[in-house]
Length: 152
Image 1 (cartoon, rainbow, N blue to C red):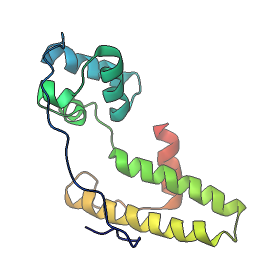
Image 2: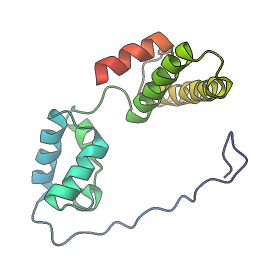
Image 3: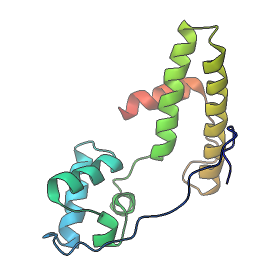
């Protein structure tokens, strides 16, 4: 499938095979407790996965437990309020808005900001449809700034 705003093809959608690591000493319940402990320390799901791989020797949480880190967090009601990809896009838009306040004539960044905001709106529409966001949720630059400040 081609990219939306570039004239080149996208990356392939291949997935890594789930390898059951027989060398891990941790059981399912222990891994879930570790994930909850790391999330209470303020780590995001990618950081949790990286920490489990590097410090605890667990190559893939999904291969051992059968569930992703986010699914485990959501089952224990410890997941993020907003989806992480949306928060990352909101962070990027806040940074671009700050950049545009200083550099008003930067048309390349202005175009990038327009594309980013349209991406955010499409993602919000999807999350409203899948009921991960409330029905009246709208993107606003000021609201995004508040959200980014509270999630840090």
